[in-house]
Image 1 (tube, rainbow, N blue to C red):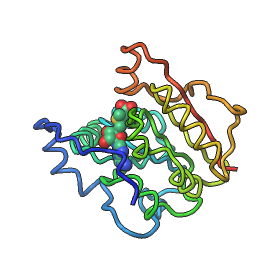
Image 2: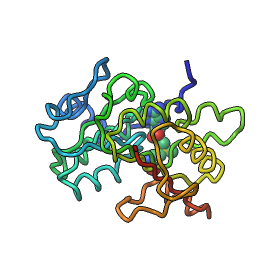
Image 3: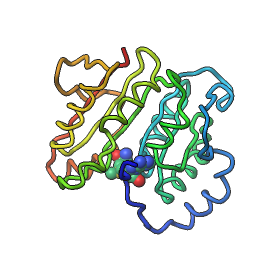
Length: 220
Ligand SMILES: C[S@@+](CC[C@H](N)C(=O)[O-])C[C@H]1O[C@@H](n2cnc3c(N)ncnc32)[C@H](O)[C@@H]1O
């Protein structure tokens, strides 16, 4: 079994996050299970579906969903406070196009995402695991990238951003060696997509003077 890409944070949940988690979980969250998700049934439409892995506090997910009502979003996260916050945002903004799965994304992708069923994966500022002995915890690595590729429709994409140069170079190598994925930017990094909302961890990286790197790969 591969080591987990996260350590469960015990960060305190605010009273509002707790309330939202209790009141809204069953309405907007999909329990982990075996078997490919039927997105048409879940969302009640045939709109494109984007999965966001590790949405953190979910501000950028809520923003993207409110700006793109014709796109469905499935957010996968293990951080309870962040899930509570996104549930609160879903309620506050009246969003009908987000669902949340509270579980390890490695297992969600393996067991719940059917072949060629998604239009995009968004992975923004995943935990960088900078120490060499922890590199095996990095999420964006083979063979997991092969599962991401398998879950994408032809023409679907993976958008990845990080403020850790070393992880950026690593992820570029892993995605480049993943069968079925093509880098439209030759062998290099992508420009920042105009549509990508700024995230909390991005702001932290910029404040520390780090360069933001983007990767964009298309399912051939
Ligand atoms: C560094 S934070 C970035 C959060 C957000 N994307 C942002 O840019 O602000 C990484 C997040 O990924 C989540 N995460 C890491 N590995 C995960 C996994 N295997 N499954 C689900 N969530 C994961 C962590 O709980 C954490 O909230």
